[in-house]
Amino acid sequence: MAAVRALDTDAIWDVLRAVPDPEIPVLSITDLGIVREVHEDRVILTPTYTGCPATLVIESMVREALDAAGFEHIAIETTLSPPWTTDWITPEGRAKLHAYGIAAPTRGVPACPQCGSEQTEEISRFGSAPCKSLWRCRSCAEPFDLFKCH
Image (cartoon, rainbow, N blue to C red; front, side, top):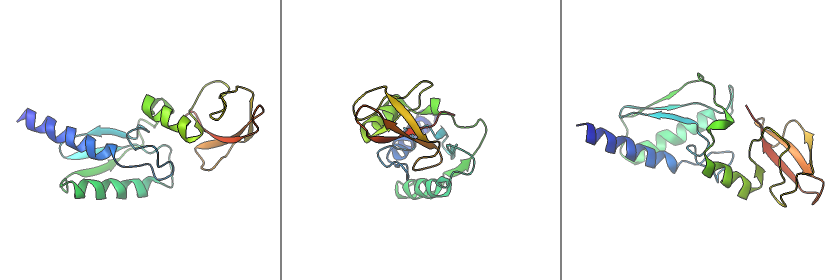
């Protein structure tokens, strides 16, 4: 019976890996680390921040994906504790952010995702979404979003 449960949770993870983030569609919700746990009867999600406007959209997308894969019985729970952190973004997710032109979270000065220069400056604390800030590269003059650390 345990082997069947493991197969079910593996299949559920596979379904969730295909659910894109609605704000950054090159990332899946698993790349972002917002899927916290998968059980044979429920999926636990943690939004990137309290009040994230995409939370209901993500829950709806997860519901649709699970239902389409035959997992109608799986409940979806959202929890705010522990709070999501940018540390939960997977290495694959960080690489996808960079390739998409968004700087991955960093504790120091972000490198420009276009040219790699560290000669960058923050233009605005808020970028295209509340979880990002707007930066500019002083070398190539390109603007870019930085996923805020938290």
